Image (cartoon, rainbow over all chains, first blue to last red; front, side):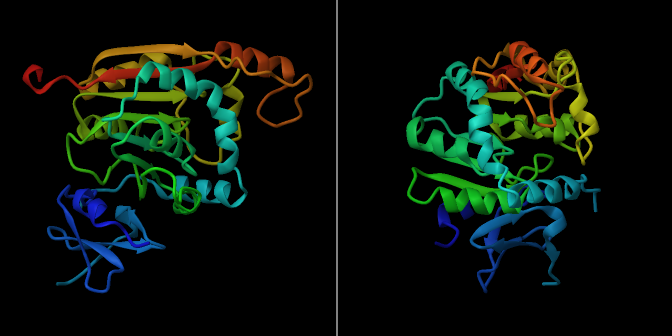
Length: 57
Length: 235
C-alpha cells in the first residue's frame, strides 16, 4: 500500500510548513519552498529535516 | 538554514529499543495509566488525534478502532518503531503513521482536536519547543495531554536518569505546566495518575531498587499535564 493521497494532502514540510508533493519517482515528498525531498521508506514518509536532501531543481 | 534540533540520538536509541522488541511491551506497561487518561480526554467520534512518540502504535490502533471515526495519527522519531506500527495496524481502523520529530511536526496549523503523548516528553530535545509545536497543530479549543512517569516530584524514578543513554529532562510538574502556559495554553492543570495494577512480590529488573520501590513509584503515579488552546477570538 502506497502513501495515501489523503495523507499527502495534509502533510507539510517540517521546516517551511508548506505542502509537499510526491516526486516523479514516487520515492519522496518535495517541499516547493526549500526544495527538500523527504524520503518515503517502505511507504512511510520520513519527515525529518536531517533525513531530507535538497534538490537543485 | 536554521539549526535543527538534535533528534538523531533519540532516533538511534529508540531504533535499538524497537529492534529489541521493547516497543511491543509498552501497551502492557502503560495501559494502567493511559486508560484513566483517555477517560479524562473524552475522545469523541469526530476528534482528530495525534499521538506524539507513538512507538509501535498500540494507542493509535486502540483509538482508531474504538473511539474516533476521524483521523488518528501516530508520529515517532524512530523509523523502526513506525515500521512496526504500520505492520501491526493493517486492517485496524484508520491510523496513519509518520516518522517525525515533535520539534518540527510535519502538519499544518490548527488541525488536531486532541494531542496525546505517553512516556515521551522527557526525551524531547527541547520540551518547550515541542509544546509550542503541539500548540500550533492543535485547532482552537483543542487540548494537549502529556503523560510521563519520569518527573521530579516522584522521588522513586530519579534513578532512571543514570540509565538513560540519551539526554532526559527531569522537571517538576509545575515546570511542565509553565511550559504549557508559555506556549499559550489555558486551563493548564496537572494531576497524578496512580498505577493500580498488581505489582510483583519480587522485582529483578534494573529500573527499581526492589519491589517496595516499584510499589511506591506506582502509588505516587504518573504525571498528567493538560491544557487547552484558546478559541481564536480569545487569542
